[in-house]
Image 1 (cartoon, rainbow, N blue to C red):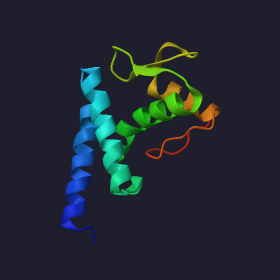
Image 2: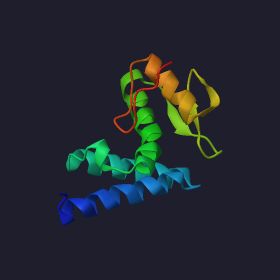
Image 3: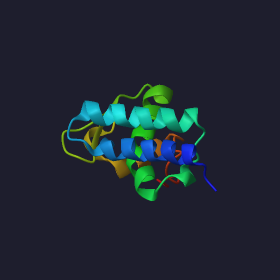
Image 4: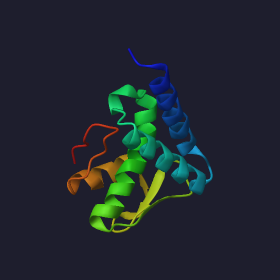
Length: 116
Protein backbone atom coordinates (compact mmCIF):
# COMPACT_ATOMS: atom_id res chain seq x y z
CA UNK A 1 0.00 0.00 0.00
CA UNK A 2 1.35 3.39 -0.99
CA UNK A 3 1.23 6.08 1.68
CA UNK A 4 -0.73 9.27 0.93
CA UNK A 5 2.50 11.30 1.00
CA UNK A 6 4.18 9.02 -1.53
CA UNK A 7 1.03 9.05 -3.70
CA UNK A 8 1.21 12.91 -3.77
CA UNK A 9 4.85 12.78 -4.86
CA UNK A 10 4.00 10.31 -7.63
CA UNK A 11 1.14 12.59 -8.73
CA UNK A 12 3.58 15.54 -8.87
CA UNK A 13 5.95 13.47 -11.00
CA UNK A 14 3.14 12.45 -13.34
CA UNK A 15 1.91 16.06 -13.61
CA UNK A 16 5.44 17.17 -14.50
CA UNK A 17 5.69 14.34 -17.02
CA UNK A 18 2.51 15.57 -18.70
CA UNK A 19 4.08 19.02 -19.10
CA UNK A 20 6.92 17.54 -21.15
CA UNK A 21 4.61 17.84 -24.16
CA UNK A 22 4.43 21.61 -23.78
CA UNK A 23 4.92 23.52 -27.01
CA UNK A 24 7.42 25.64 -25.07
CA UNK A 25 10.62 23.55 -25.14
CA UNK A 26 12.09 25.34 -22.12
CA UNK A 27 9.00 24.55 -20.03
CA UNK A 28 9.05 20.93 -21.21
CA UNK A 29 12.72 20.54 -20.28
CA UNK A 30 12.16 22.09 -16.84
CA UNK A 31 9.21 19.76 -16.23
CA UNK A 32 11.31 16.74 -17.17
CA UNK A 33 14.13 17.91 -14.90
CA UNK A 34 11.67 18.40 -12.04
CA UNK A 35 10.20 14.93 -12.53
CA UNK A 36 13.62 13.25 -12.71
CA UNK A 37 14.70 15.14 -9.58
CA UNK A 38 11.64 13.95 -7.64
CA UNK A 39 12.16 10.37 -8.84
CA UNK A 40 15.75 10.42 -7.61
CA UNK A 41 15.11 12.32 -4.36
CA UNK A 42 12.27 10.09 -3.21
CA UNK A 43 13.59 6.89 -4.82
CA UNK A 44 10.46 6.34 -6.87
CA UNK A 45 10.62 3.19 -8.97
CA UNK A 46 9.63 3.49 -12.61
CA UNK A 47 7.06 0.75 -11.97
CA UNK A 48 5.23 3.12 -9.59
CA UNK A 49 4.53 5.55 -12.44
CA UNK A 50 1.85 5.18 -15.07
CA UNK A 51 2.98 3.85 -18.46
CA UNK A 52 2.14 7.27 -19.92
CA UNK A 53 4.42 9.07 -17.46
CA UNK A 54 7.25 6.63 -18.16
CA UNK A 55 6.85 7.12 -21.91
CA UNK A 56 6.83 10.90 -21.51
CA UNK A 57 9.98 10.95 -19.37
CA UNK A 58 12.06 8.35 -21.24
CA UNK A 59 13.25 10.62 -24.10
CA UNK A 60 14.30 13.36 -21.66
CA UNK A 61 16.13 10.81 -19.52
CA UNK A 62 17.97 9.42 -22.55
CA UNK A 63 18.81 12.92 -23.79
CA UNK A 64 20.25 13.88 -20.41
CA UNK A 65 22.37 10.73 -20.25
CA UNK A 66 23.64 11.16 -23.82
CA UNK A 67 24.63 14.73 -23.03
CA UNK A 68 26.51 13.76 -19.87
CA UNK A 69 28.06 10.43 -20.84
CA UNK A 70 28.92 11.03 -24.47
CA UNK A 71 29.20 14.82 -24.65
CA UNK A 72 26.47 14.60 -27.24
CA UNK A 73 24.28 17.66 -27.66
CA UNK A 74 20.54 16.97 -27.57
CA UNK A 75 17.52 19.24 -27.62
CA UNK A 76 13.89 19.08 -28.59
CA UNK A 77 13.13 20.05 -32.14
CA UNK A 78 10.29 22.43 -32.99
CA UNK A 79 8.06 19.56 -34.07
CA UNK A 80 6.54 17.75 -31.06
CA UNK A 81 8.07 14.34 -30.40
CA UNK A 82 11.20 15.12 -32.44
CA UNK A 83 14.73 15.69 -31.15
CA UNK A 84 17.97 17.15 -32.41
CA UNK A 85 21.01 15.01 -31.63
CA UNK A 86 24.46 15.93 -32.90
CA UNK A 87 25.91 13.25 -35.11
CA UNK A 88 22.51 11.72 -35.83
CA UNK A 89 20.67 14.35 -37.83
CA UNK A 90 18.64 17.47 -37.32
CA UNK A 91 15.19 16.05 -36.71
CA UNK A 92 14.86 12.56 -35.22
CA UNK A 93 12.05 10.85 -33.39
CA UNK A 94 12.26 9.82 -29.76
CA UNK A 95 12.42 6.17 -30.93
CA UNK A 96 15.35 6.95 -33.25
CA UNK A 97 17.07 8.75 -30.39
CA UNK A 98 16.49 5.76 -28.12
CA UNK A 99 18.02 3.43 -30.73
CA UNK A 100 21.00 5.81 -31.08
CA UNK A 101 21.39 5.77 -27.30
CA UNK A 102 21.06 1.97 -27.09
CA UNK A 103 23.91 1.59 -29.58
CA UNK A 104 26.01 3.52 -27.09
CA UNK A 105 24.83 1.55 -24.06
CA UNK A 106 22.50 4.28 -22.74
CA UNK A 107 19.01 3.26 -21.63
CA UNK A 108 16.29 5.03 -19.73
CA UNK A 109 15.13 4.00 -16.28
CA UNK A 110 11.64 4.91 -17.50
CA UNK A 111 11.39 2.49 -20.41
CA UNK A 112 12.80 -0.89 -21.38
CA UNK A 113 16.04 -0.90 -23.40
CA UNK A 114 15.54 -0.44 -27.12
CA UNK A 115 17.30 -2.96 -29.30
CA UNK A 116 19.10 -1.39 -32.23
